[in-house]
Each structure stands twice: as structure tokens, then as C-alpha cells.
Length: 197
Image (cartoon, rainbow, N blue to C red; front, side, top):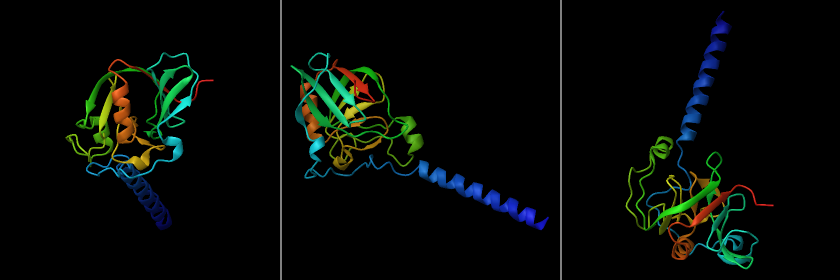
């Protein structure tokens, strides 16, 4: 009987330990969201993620944005079989999506009110942060339809080419500023998980 009680108490303790560990992991800082951190402008991107003109076959009209999450690239169709390619950071596991939207608005040095769902997952985040160099949305934001998702800059250039966000697409500030100046509100945005064959 004593052995059975000891075994039950060990199982209960193990379950409590697993539960508390999973709770703390769920509330760990997202490595992609560091409010107040100033971007390291001298950070050098891997050549694969630097802005460049590339050959790109598509039937989409020039000006269309195509995001290939598996490649960690955003393309702006230029026509004549070419596109301007940018390196991006994408949503982490469980936060990746695909679809067709339009840019509903643009903002320079946008304010950041994290959505309630994000605060529920990461209660340490501020409820509001004014736009500026330490803001995780970076220098520009292009809002996607009526969703909480954006194409935006970042104060973490080292996250370009990775999957760490809560579903948004991030570019280094120089690239998001370049993109912001190229595409107007209303631009079609296609988000794909896998390349089109």
C-alpha cells in the first residue's frame, strides 16, 4: 500500500512538472518580438535574402506581391518574366497560412497594439507601443485586408530567413521602405506555402 501511494505521488508530481514546464514554454519570449530593441543596421543579410531582381515566371500582373513562405521570399512581379525578390521572416509552426488578400492600408513608423490573441500567448508584451526605431513593426507596415497580419519592418534583422513570427511577414527596414514606396493600397497579395509548379 505504501508503495502504491508513493507511485501515485510520483505520477502526480511528474504531471504537475510537465504542466508547469509547458505553461512556461508557452509564455517564453518570442525571439522575433523584442519591444524596445534598436535594429542593428549594420547587420549583413545572407546573400539569398538580399533584395535582388530575379527571373520569375508567373501569369500575375506587374505589381502583384507573391509571398513564398517555404522559400522565405517575397516577390513583386515586374513583368517580362522578372520580379524583385526580398528576403523575409515568416510565421513559426502553427502560425503559417496562405491566401489571397489586398493591401488595405500603409503606415510609416506604425504604432503597435499587439492583438488580444498575441497578448494571451505572450502576456509580457506591452499593450501599446508607439512607432519608432525600437518598435517590432519597424519602419513601415502594409496591412493585409481586415486581418491582424502585416508585411512590416523589424528591429530584429537577424530573423530574416527564419520562421519566428505570429503570422506576419517581416523585412529589414531598408527593404520594407523600398517595398512601401513601390506598392499602393489595393495591391494584390498572394501568400503561398509551397512554390507553384
